[in-house]
Length: 449
Ligand SMILES: *Cc1c(COP(=O)(O)O)cnc(C)c1O
Ligand code: SF4
Image 1 (cartoon, rainbow, N blue to C red):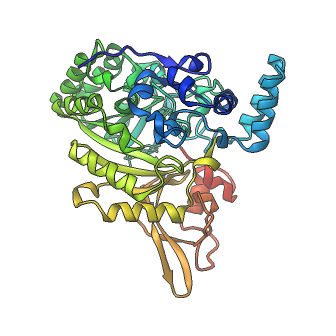
Image 2 (cartoon, rainbow, N blue to C red):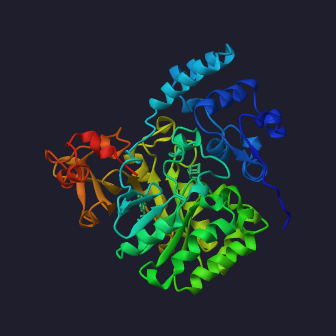
Image 3 (tube, protein in one colour):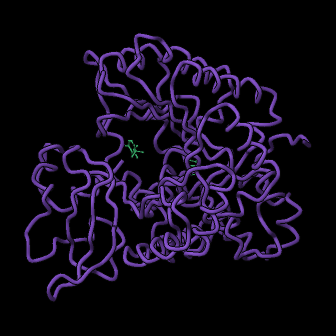
């Protein structure tokens, strides 16, 4: 296979790209500059040459996925930044303006930074989130960037320098000790950013100690990544790609399950020879690939897109896993799809695939109390309702218990919903506000993560 060297583009050099020069109008180039000043922007040569169909720009889904779009900022924010750039506003003043705008984009939906961070002998493990009993999230310090940035990314504050890697952790010893002290853990999920930006040696330094026989309760090592989409060469022609596959083999040989949690938003990300070869090579190690994606307006808000993507994934040997709802942060207003439409899109797509692709669950909201799936809408007596259930709950006892919310055409997130049948609270609310050590104000529900 032909080798490609990793080269990234951002606000500093995107104007040099021949495709940008050929296909974008001066207005579009300005829009990128304005929106990219507020929200993160980074693409690379592979995305530009192999994934984006430039003849289809600006409607191309991968273009919308990676290049900042005018509509991602509300008009008054857009105009303020555009005026600032056109008038060469002094640096300090611009910084203040950007900070103010970013603070209005709900940068921490969920109090993600403060909640779910466990302690070990009095030390806060800032690179760990342990919210659901069996699975702990781990944010390795060196995996906190990505090969390109998604325009809808909910970790955007980290990429514009607002969060200063508060999530990330360097100490492997603390990680190991924590796992040792928590026999209820069966899964560890490496996440980021993208842990696959790390070289194999680094990744191996984190993973090898976990294979210790003392940690036999750890059954599954998951790696959340978008590298199959944004940089499949990580698994094929990069200098340490073979070593990486060897590492997967080693975990498998230790008797554990390796799950690559692959982020794909559109079937166009599955069309290249590079991604097909990467998938085949990963599967050859004994690792499984499970796929997940949020549902995003302007990118993949059509049942045919999902059905085609799931079918292709199954054909390539991947297992469809989650469809998520757009989170309440950043450019949510540009990407969000109302819950009732999300539910229809899921159902129509699900109906057209065979049972082996129906491993997928969604649409699911990763909210404060847990992962809440919209099962659909129904008429109960004279009332139209949403039928919901927890796929994951802060209290495991909440899982898989159907509950009901009043139907609402505009609702896009759990916090927009109220209980059906005139009930005052959802069944979990009292206990949830107890978890938060706080009041039972409805906005408490938005504490996700
Ligand atoms: C999604 C998620 C997990 C993993 O949940 P599974 O349903 O087991 O895939 C773990 N922790 C957090 C905080 C999550 O959001
Ligand atoms: S790959 Fe994930 S973390 Fe990286 S930009 Fe996309 S959504 Fe954000």
